[in-house]
Length: 396
Image (cartoon, rainbow, N blue to C red):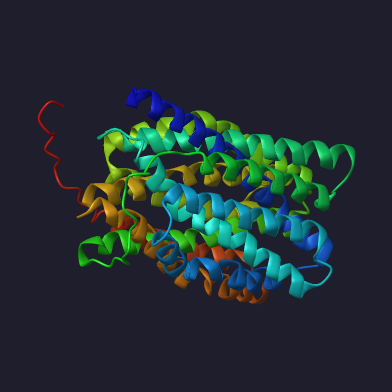
């Protein structure tokens, strides 16, 4: 059997799985803030508190993935994650009359989401050539963005023609998660590999752990409060949020593979340091655009910051390619990524509560000034990235 044909078939299935997972994520990310605000009457403080249970599965992901790795390869774990995501979506859409039930379904959905974050990078790296890891993960990022476009398009069309039907939004999300699970289940890569049976902590990975913690801070500030600036302060409807997410994803289809090439070309140190500089710019826009720019142009600038922020998230794959290059053992990669997720959630679980308090007490500007200060620290941490020189094997 031609091994290249097998890899090509696995890559095709992985692209489809990633695309349908992207559609699920697009539906969640473009509707969740409006859903919480419209259906359950959340304010900024409540939104911040919800992040604690939502991110709780991420904190325990090293334990969850560690247990699953004892029995399953990464592709099977990804399929199980999609089952959890589908269950959470159906619960949000049809079984959330009370806040207590809402939290249960949010946690189940979040569990699936965080498991995928732990295994998607290692799965992609198995289909990457040496020196082209960024390109391969960038291609998968582009496939995810294509899926996001499909998911957000469904939200936009439903919102436009039948209204904000969150039950329909989350039904579609569950179907897409089921399809993603089907294609993950059909992946053949890694069948011959022995299951990993260890949790890994190495002092050589300390910069990776620090970058993971910083990413947790960045993720929470922008995914929660960046969108909340638009929804709460400017009353932006779900259809417009979906459109912005659509535009960001459309750009991502083209830019994510290109950014993957940039990672391979410039290296993780320069790329991640540049990401921190751009985050400072985005923070300042969120903090002061409405004070310095007349209406309605301030809103257009905020839209631009929202789209730019989502595009910059593509650079997170540089953490995965960096880890592969410094890994002492390839079997370290999945457990170390899982530990990185746990570390970033140790920060991310409590930060939104603090941020929500600061927002309510002092104003939203101080939330983003705090985030800008963190980005400055992140810049100097990223400058400490050192990738050892690789010696190509004979015949390369």
